Length: 99
Image (cartoon, rainbow, N blue to C red; front, side):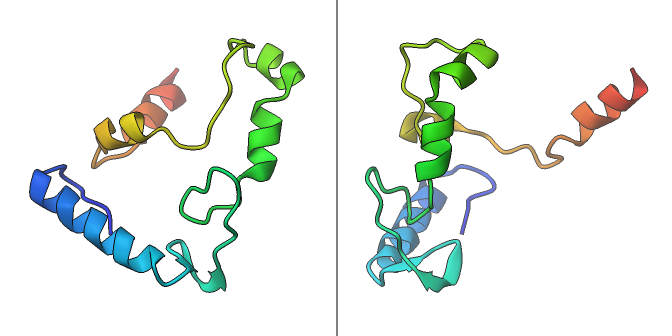
């Protein structure tokens, strides 16, 4: 469950559901697999490959990223304050296609 409109009540329910679900040892994104439990576990998501790729020095240079910053899959502050747009990227794609 994800809150479309971030309200305190919705966030509380979302946290309760996620917490209860994680106690089952299942993956919230795939009910048919067991949780991988990797270092820095992010809700059982297989992230070791993308962690290694995004933290590779050559990739950081190619992306013009700060070489001293370690990339992480999730950022709780960013995620909590992220606002979803009901139309997604539709407006952006439309503008790009016109250019």
